[in-house]
Image 1 (tube, one colour):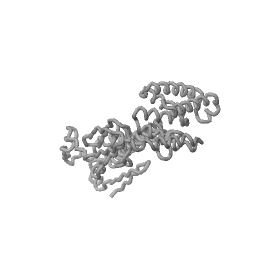
Image 2 (cartoon, one colour):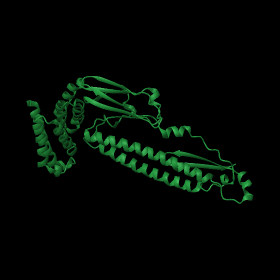
Image 3 (cartoon, one colour):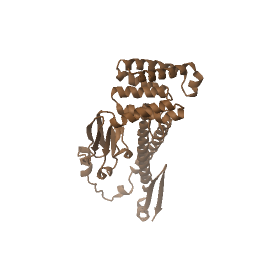
Image 4 (cartoon, helix red, strand yellow):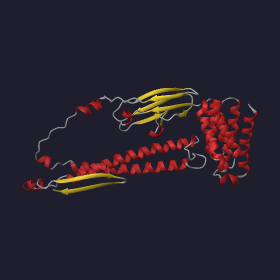
Length: 348
């Protein structure tokens, strides 16, 4: 172990120890005494494991330390060193860059300077991966791309993003299309590019039946003038639509809560650089937000369809009055608005 690393670890341990001796300061930083005790124990064990080159167990312990003590820059620096020795250079660079951005506000310029030097030294050695999405692929409705199970938004497309060396799985999906999967091997110091092809249409039995199905012609009999199924179906659709809208609201609230938690001090900075917990919270917020949007759209569509069926269902009339009822057809128009459904109808 080099002397600078020993000093960095000793400083980190000293900071944690002082937090135990000053519970008021710990509470001011949002760390209770039990969390401080757990963080100190985990930190000591992680340093011992790093000395024994057991980075696969040391780094997760340090991740937990940064979660328990989110304002502790020393633990973040040590975590970066652990990642670097483990060969996860992009993860190490992310920790160094995070400490560099947080140090001025924490009044620790020396620690910020050391983190900046480490980040600058790692930058040329990082592996990067850019995902190219041609225009004909971007236009596919419902296109979703993930890297190692994490959603890759359109803002990241075509941008070289630092990644750890090793295998990474890219998956592209879209409704009615076959999923596309590819394994990418990232090498430190290299710039990789992955191009998403046009997804093939799914020729599965269900989709084939839908494409080949033709509308059944029904004669205009008395049964078609007064169908018995429309009202029950319309009420069921409205009920399901309302449930979907409520689910969308709940998921949206959870997404906002996750995103707000990721904005806590030490989680993510203004440049969207996050520690491991903040990164996890941001991903959870995106997933919940997507679910909220889908639930809102599906619920609104069901409710709108149910209202259309209900408002256009003919009233029960006597046989002698059906001719006059047909002379006054009802027309309706339904519009989905943000947070509401608008229905407009008229007699002609």
